[in-house]
Length: 247
Length: 228
Image (tube, rainbow over all chains, first blue to last red):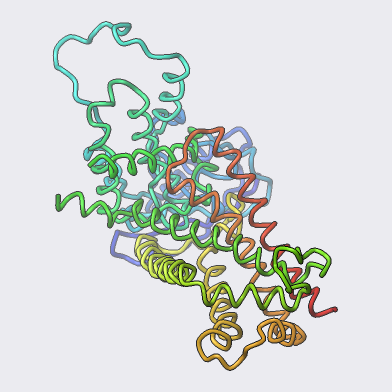
């Protein structure tokens, strides 16, 4: 396959970036998207040019490190995929592919396609935890939880914190990310202790980190690799209003 | 307590204000429509026994509008409605500006297939509706209630809707309103946290039916008068 790449190159957070065009002539359909970028970087290394920097880690779709907005879609053309799980068979011979970093004020570009997603950690530190006694792990069956509830909580807990929701949202809102954690813990008995404070702390942190507000366009849930549902945002709003009412 | 007050400035609280004021205005639309429908119902529909000597569309409409202007509890509700609408607009501007600040550099290549155009452009639709409301109130409310230059509202309505540009303008405003409601109705319930899955599915259908229903019913009134 012959592929033309238009890749965002930016020297540093403060430097002005622009799209650069690269040509790859021997791309295999079975390559993952990141392997294709590795191939480009090998070419650049041979030529003595600076390689294209992008985030990646497990390449198994579970770590949430890979990012990239490919042809205007976070994580590429396949819905509910991570970039690392996107393969070149999703593209045709002769295609031009635009690759840009995740864009949001709260996700400043570090270099090229790498963005700083520390703001997500700050939000989790604000309330994405439960109070538990230290010591040995308790017996798992001590707290009975209905199967449906544990499954539902697990669906929310599946969020890998990649930030595709923010990259896709027209308001750069992290509502889906925040709501996934709030819903996950609100559904379980272990999360009940900080139920009220958690939603207050996490939403305050979300706003302070400079994310926008949710308009319910639903675009975030359409690209989420873990299929976190828009319903979680509604659940978060319920938890917030509940906290307001009982405070 | 200061921290709790701070909660009212959060993005979720702001959306709550949008939702409550929006739903209140949407409810008002039903009441407003009930009055408007007098304009297109045949004379035979009006209960002569109940309304005494009022027996035709012309008198019925004028009697109804006279009642609206002179019955004081309605005025109180009207002022709450104006305040609600003003809050809706001010809150929308604050939210839009905050969201604008949150955005990073623009994408060179965009793909909008993941959401509907009307859900992304509520602000533009709202602005069209806002301009429409100003013109609409200038044409009727100002002349009939505030200035008092027109005493026969039915006559004023019929005269106004005989003008082509007015009918075109109203249809544009009403179509914008329809799309605004289709997204706004469901979105407002989501903002308020109506989360059970079964509710959300029903609310989505109600939202679509409400938006389309309001647009069609409001939209046919100027057309019927124009072509009569």
